[in-house]
Length: 186
Image (cartoon, rainbow, N blue to C red; front, side, top):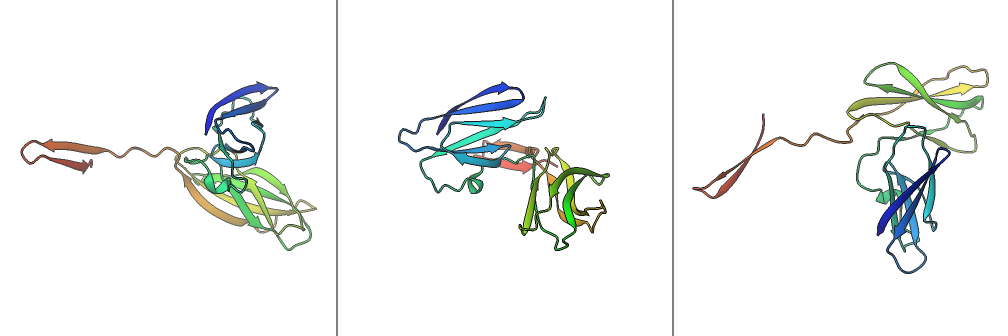
């Protein structure tokens, strides 16, 4: 179990150091940024780059199990980013993919570029931070060497709910019947 995380910042790089109470070696540290798995290793320290004024939740899980599946055991919570995947284009003229994002049905905004790699059958991109209680849609557009847009591919849309509202209930205790009644507020 991680007992403490110490953070030091130097030149825009945040160094996080974990203190584990596991006694025997080796200890494997699994690092998460905003609930997304970042990697694992035996080092108690990891560097994270955050733009000025940005904040993030860093979590570290420690284990003796070298086969521990870090991505499958992400800490609870709803990460404010999404990892998007798509299959590569079979068109050999594609040089890169532009990733566009739309928030609440507004205008499409380019949020990233991923170089085309004909040796890979799929590509991925992690979105910038996403706002709570917002509907997002994403599309990937292949771009050729001349800068021409190809046919956009729509990816799954999603409503981000990081902190849902607590349910509103009325609770009453009846002394005569010794019963508790719970009613959802209208």
